[in-house]
Figure 1 (spheres, rainbow, N blue to C red):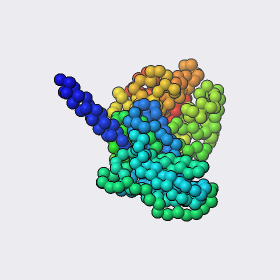
Figure 2 (figure 1 turned 120 degrees about the vertical axis):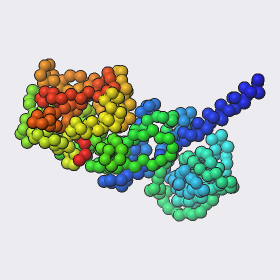
Figure 3 (figure 1 turned 180 degrees about the horizontal axis):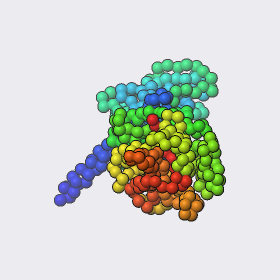
Figure 4 (figure 1 turned 180 degrees about the vertical axis):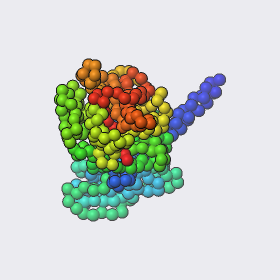
Length: 427
């Protein structure tokens, strides 16, 4: 019986280790569309709350929550590529003074797998690293007045002798540094967690969400979204396929001149907005609140551009419907559109996962009929649509999200002088 228990225990341990290894994923980033490079990527684990920010050239390393902690890479003076490595990698090192430098390769158990010492002049030096068995290692470089370290991931399964060899040296200034840098950044991850990536590239910003099940490259199709005031907005693609994918703003529109709610928004050639409780800083957080005629810019065109940026328009109820259908229907889509947690939405913020990256915020609204005041910030989000036609009748709708349910409310013909939020969709 004791032997059987040991076998079960060993089997359980092996399975646990295999599960841990199965979560060892590497995510890289690329860009297409209006720009071809990624500057930074902010990664939020929507399930656990963990967050990291990377350079666009960095590699995100998803590890089990009990994995190793991060170390500080000084990538101005140390560059290891490719990383992960297959057969070999190159280690570039900048030494600030002449003298003996020691390069060590250490495994996760703290054992030194390989080590060399070289007399190096001040400058940049390249080493070839090879013959490393599959796994994760620390690379440490120490000299008279410097100490650098980074991580190396090997995906090599071929047998061989572990070697570190000096292949090139270029004398230079003590102020030299490596221009081309990249790092592998660890992030705790459990299979099934939802990750949200927010990538930036100059004026461009884009959101993507994913549930990784293996190593991959995330490509961001950047598209310009800049309003008439010069404000730039993050975008998000929701749906699949050429006909099914839509590109939405991932932030509420905040264009126009702020006016006091005692003033009507009128057809005067100036885009006007309300800010919740007449505090302009609320517009910087939640965007502006607009009356329907102002949103449409006083036209009755289905899918009108209205106050949206060039190349964008006020979504029709049919475009909202396509997205809601893709997200599983009105019964569940509300939770998938809302930001998670209770820092913006009031508790309990039922069903909120934000798994599509839409990132809806509870901006509240302006009640023009009954209370004639701002209401429900933290509780509700209302979004205008452009009109639709039913025979000779014109109808317009708004979409409602609440902290207290996970479905989507769709209502028609609200008072057009109410103030609601706006999200635009790409043409």
